[in-house]
Amino acid sequence: MSFQRVTDYLGSYLLGEAYFDAEHLYFCNDQNINLINLSDFQTISGGEPFDTPGPIPELELKGTLAFSPMGYIGLGIFDFENPKEPVLVSTTPTPHSIQSIALHDHKAYLAGTGGLSIMDVTDPALPNLISSIEYGNYYDTVDIALHQNTVWLGFQLQSVTSFDISDPTHPEPGITLPFRAVALEVHQGLLHTLNGDGTYRVLSLETSPPVELASMLLTNGGSSIVVKDNLVLVGHNWDGLSILDISAPSNPILINHIKVMGGARNISIQGDRAVISNYRLTHFLDISDPLNVEKLGTIWDGGLNNTILPGGEVLVHHFRDYQYSLQAYPPACAMLTPVPDTEHNIYSRLSIHPNPFNPQTSISFDLPEPSPVIVKIYDLTGRLVQTLASDEVMPAGLQSWAWMGRDALGRSVSSGVYLVRLEAGPVQTTGRMVLVR
Image 1 (tube, rainbow, N blue to C red):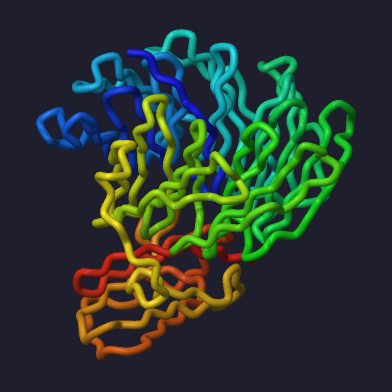
Image 2 (image 1 turned 60 degrees about the horizontal axis):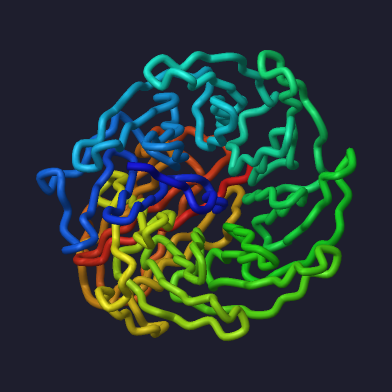
């Protein structure tokens, strides 16, 4: 069976992805991969998820192989030739914890905390580390994009950086751009970037240094970006989706903004369909007419990100029950469970302010009824950092917890992205926050 990755995941910190072929949908998470048969919407492989040795922040597909950066575990490679029985081909350690991956010419470019590694993956059973270079800091890499002999890296907390990979055995520091980016995409010689404050930029890569053609500040922050023909789809953390017309790259025009419950942390597109995931819900949209986008349906199962596979199936990556997971959904919207688009929905009541923060932030949640509450904070590797509430029964109404950026032993934690996990009765929800020292 052959796989094709339709669109890069260009969202906020990479935490997993979803893929599909004509018959099946695949979801990966921190610990497992699930396979769904789309003909009857049932999990196969004995109904059990496929366990993995570590987190799967994203997948990059090449033929029947799936490549994943797995944090401190290193590079993981899986074989899906028989989708009912996926096989772990290899895990190879890297000098740094890795979060982002790009494949080109039998090489895997792996970026993460503090460094860039390049591996030869000609033999997937025995990947070979070609080279590794440190950034000179330990901020987390948000995204990676390739253009010819250059690797571009986007960061939440520092400037966009490039490396010259003409000689993969000796990558050389390249150009640093005077802005940050949580998402990058290279398309037809243009570098599209999105900052966390919602600033979109487009630069021409035909010159060195790149020339900025245009920039514009969009609403409600930014988390993800996808380019489709002459359109740019921009996801916002808590609001929805903006659509830009870039027929003239030097004059991008905002032509539509679609509000969706929970925001658009990740966007995948295939043909005229877009799938948007956030921590609470997954939304399906028809974008055949970008001026009049139709909401096809919503499923209750939210995800940290998603990817559309060639057959229209959707893979969503989850973080729930203190584990990451991958699940698949069919393309037929008739099988979706509608979700009322109301601001009173319980999944919209988690608030983190300020965000980003230093040194303290407040985490608030509106309890619909008295309930035992658990509030825990994790880093991006899934490690428990701090417990703010441990099964404490709280009354209905607004509840708040302060986090001072310290772990359970009272030690200050480093700058970066953290996840807050809240459980209140039947409600389970996750939020993202950024600590800036």
